[in-house]
Image 1 (cartoon, rainbow, N blue to C red):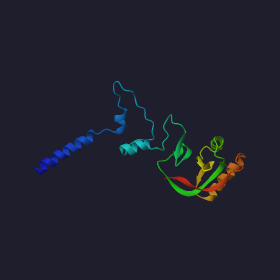
Image 2: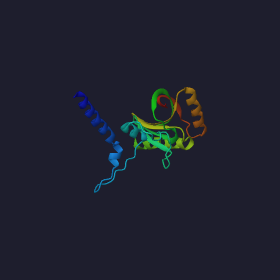
Image 3: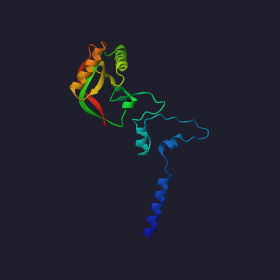
Length: 177
């Protein structure tokens, strides 16, 4: 009797698992009389919801995708080139180059964002971080593990004659792994 109940339970469980659909398939399934749903999300989110899949990794550049991604991490507006995006990043102590520190006004925010764009114009592969650190708007660039790396990048920035007031600051940086 126990074997019969156990086998019925296993058959029921296996049929439920095999009939299970992925979350996005259910969400995107067209139904008559209803609108359509369009979902734009990172492949990492799909992987986390559905489990491991055989999809392209997040760091792969998809045709038609922009070359940069803008994300917000811990209040930072970060622009990172698509080719440099990786699956995960860890935080560590390191250095960044501060290219702007202004007041707490709207114009200071716009100036910080303008400076980030200016850095991107000269060094498109360098990540930029624009955030509000009370009481001012700050624009910092790069994720350097050592002071020497930061110093070399600082000299390259100053060589453009556009970032004369740039300086190296200790910061928590993001290291891809």
